[in-house]
Length: 175
Image (cartoon, rainbow, N blue to C red; front, side, top):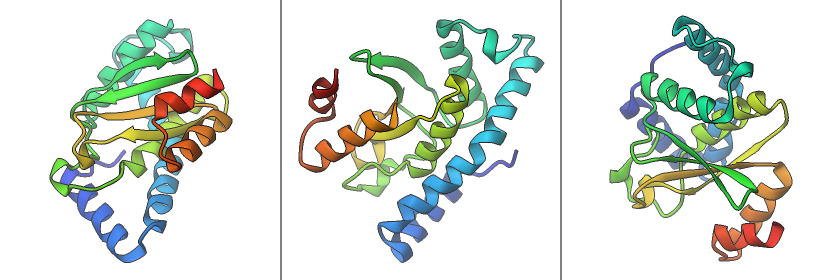
């Protein structure tokens, strides 16, 4: 694993957004997704080094606690894992490392994280998952909130949000 400072990641995102426009999101998501496998391996190694056993043997509550500790220890920030409408997992952070509250953006922008979480949590569930950031500290929200769910559900939420619907309302349509 390679350490990258928050300011370096913010500068990279800003340069990509400036030079590549909307395509920057895709580039960052792809990079995050590609890194997911090594991140998961690092998590497994961290679990072993902590004497916590295998990831696959963890109960849900224990996994949530350990994953939160891992991401905090890795410098990403604190992470609270929950559920919304029994349809998606929520990942909330008041201090997520990719967010830049000073940027004043008009849309969520933790694109690297969405790719990274998609691969990482897909490995936990051994199924393809999609991740959508619906609240972001870079746009003035108090937290970054990521939704993790099936590609169909996340696609529906994304499309409805594009039409101006709130993400919780969009989720209510599918559950």
